Image 1: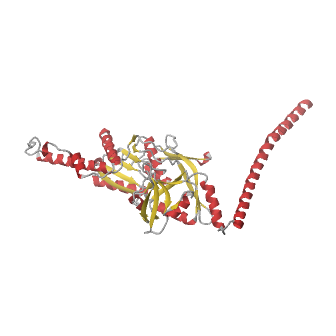
Image 2 (image 1 turned 60 degrees about the horizontal axis):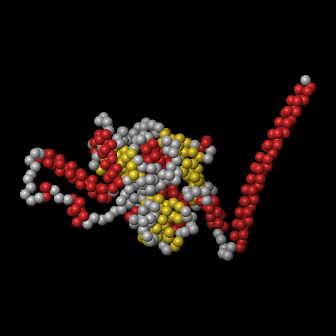
Image 3 (image 1 turned 30 degrees about the vertical axis):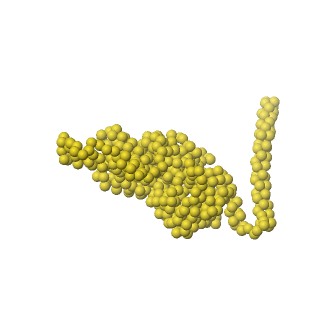
Length: 444
C-alpha cells in the first residue's frame, strides 16, 4: 500500500514537473513578445521626439501622430485607413446621398490612384473618366508616393472650381489631361425605366436610399406597364457601381430571393462570422432577371450579383467585376475621427470568395467604344428593300390593322437597333431577357 501511495505521489509530482517544464517556455515566449512590443513602442517614441526636436522645419505634432496612425492602417490593405474628423463627416454625408466633389470612386493599386468607377451623371462621368483609369497628377502636381487619403484631399475643392487630372488609360499611348468642374454630387441611388416590355433598374450606389428607391421605382414601372403580367422581366444594371452599405446590398438581394443564404462574412475569429438569409417575398414575382456588371462593379454590387447568380435567380452578363471581397467596419475614435478597418471577408451562397477574383459573368459581353456614325454609314446600315423600288407592287394580303401592327413592330426593332449603338451591353441583356421570357412557364 505504501509502495502504491509512493508511486501515485511520484506520478503526480512528475506530472506537475512535466507541466511546469512545458508551460515555462510558453510563458517566457509570451513575455518576450510583450517586451518586444514595448521596445517597438519605445522606439516609436524615440523617433517621434527626434523628429520633433531636430527635423529641418518645425512640425505639427498632431499631424505627425495622425500620419503615423494612417500609415499603420494603410500598411494593412488598400481599404483600411484613418479618417480625420472632416473626412469622417464627408463619408457620413456620402452614404446619405449628397456631397460635393467630382463623382469618382477611387482606390490605390501598386502606389497608383485607380478609378474604380465614375458615378452616373456626375462631373467626372460627363468629362469622360472611365473605370480603370489611373490618375498620376492633380493640377500638375504628381500624386505618386501619396497615400489614398492624401491624394483624395488634393482632389477636393470648392463647388464650381476647376481641376485638371492627368490620366493614364490602357490602350492610349500617352497620358492626357481631363478638365473637371467640381459640383455638388446628388446621387440618385436607383433610376428606373421601361425598355419595351422590360424594366431596367440602374443602381448607381448602395446608400441609405437604394432599397427604398428600387422598391418604389419597380412598383411604378410595373403599374405604368399595366401590371406584372405586362412585364417580361427585369434588368438590374450594376455597372460602374462601386458599392457602399452592406445592409443595402443584402436588402436588394433579398428583394428578388424567396429563401436561402444571401451572403456570409467571416472574420478573424469564428465567433465574428455572420450569415444573412433571404426572407419570403420576391418583388419581381418570379419574372426573369438579368444582372449587368463590369470592371467598375465592386463590393456591394458583387454581393448582389454573386447571390443572384449562385441561386440561379439571374443571368449575369457583361465583364468580370472588380474583385473587392472584404468588409470594412468604421469605428469612431477619440477626437471625432474614425478608423476604417477591414474586419472580414464576405462569401457568396456557394461559399466562394470574390476577393481579387471578382464575379465572372455567365455571358461575357464587352462594351465596344463609341464611334460616331456618319450619314453614309447610316444609309448603308439601313440598306434598300423591294419597297424602295419605284413602282413596286403593294402587299394586298394583309389588312390595314395588320399593317399598323407590323409598322409598330418595325418601330420597336428600330428603337432596339438605336439602343445597340448607344449601349450594346444593355441591348444584349434585353435580348437575353426576351429569350428567358419566351421560355418561362405560361402561368408567369
